[in-house]
Length: 217
Image (cartoon, rainbow, N blue to C red; front, side):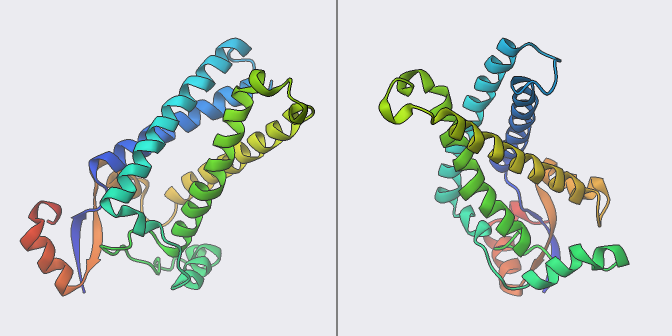
């Protein structure tokens, strides 16, 4: 194995990440205003911004799903238990003892087992829950008069808000982990430039040098 600097996060992935982050922050801010948790903007403005940010984010996610499956990048998000115990132990204990992270990025696995599991829950559970409930909520005027619609609004709102708070918890943990281990700059720069340190096998290094020389330094 050798460690080389490799283009890990491609341009669309970086654009998707930062656009998604911006939209989620707007949605959280406006969602809190809609719930009456702050009065920094009025209710009508909050609803307009919330709906607009949601539509932008939905468009980004649709493109992201298409990109993940056409490029094969979805494989990086497959959950695995291999090495999971070591990563959990590191975050629960080793990180406070100054130990090195037990996981190193690989060409075919850029997310550690805990990351892959967390992203899987986010993309397969929380995102669908908040989208389905949000769309049903947005279309309330079309189904409120139906027999099945009576009394459902509270349940839809509960699912939507619960998913939103779960996503907020994910964001807080995500930001916190950026401050651990390496410096904040070392954590952030790969998602800005796309380049990061990756452990390569001899075959992977030879492949990149021959077939994708622009991805390796």
